[in-house]
Length: 383
Image (tube, rainbow, N blue to C red):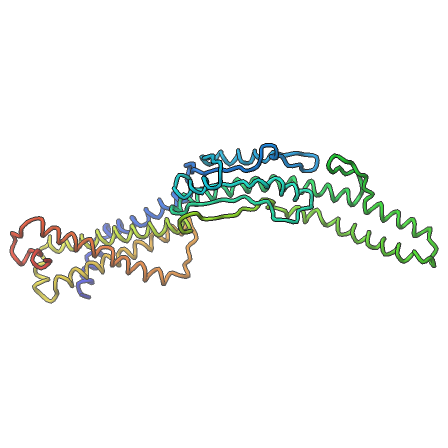
């Protein structure tokens, strides 16, 4: 079989156009795949359940009040919403495939946000729930990226307002001022003024007075608090995610869309190139009347077929590696696992053309009687 394989490789070497077409096919598929992964302009269907009462949409952030429903309206610009009334209905929409995902806004979302703004929240953070149908990982990733993008916008806007409000509270705590809670206004002395008053009191207090030590401890604490609160504003600027996302999969197995694209492209390339090249080289043997001479000589029909399958598998392997190289320009591939890829691609490339060709050969013989001489006809040997 080795000399047969070398003969076919020599034929391919003398046919550079054929080799170039095979390699160009892999590169073309890889480029098209890369562009397909990069953009998707369709609006995916998303079930939407808002459990927040209409009277509780607002959140008070300092002197400002924001309407949380405006962020949901921005999400609708990039998805096709399906409004549902219950959680069970949302899950059913996702499970049946009517919607790729479901976005559920819990009824206590604004209350938790308000608690976070008031710096009094000790419970769970405000969380929205997203349910996915991942039977089609391509659509699932598209809708997930859009939902995350809109929630990131909401997080950024709320975070900026939250930072401003919290910085205002800390400014009052540090320097003093008026503070309103539940319609009541309080006058806050502030740490700075507290420290100044303590220093004035200490200057009027005799050094041997018993209360002087306690006053000095309070003054030192006030000074320490002042020094550390001055550093709090840069820390507040790092607040980036007041809203959390709970991700759940209703049906299907989580698979990266890029991995799905790449595996699909590799499988198609292996199948088409392996089948076409192996079948084409076998047809060339018959066209040149070399098939009969070969099978009457040192090789059997099955050995000849196996050699063509091996040739197709090797060619498909090379074309697929070229394709993966083009795909790597658009996506990160784990080249550290290339040894496993080579083995898997070689086995797949050899397996892809085998079954279709044997089935086709049997069907050809069954379709019409054999009228050629036994030296040129394969029919009897395939039965």
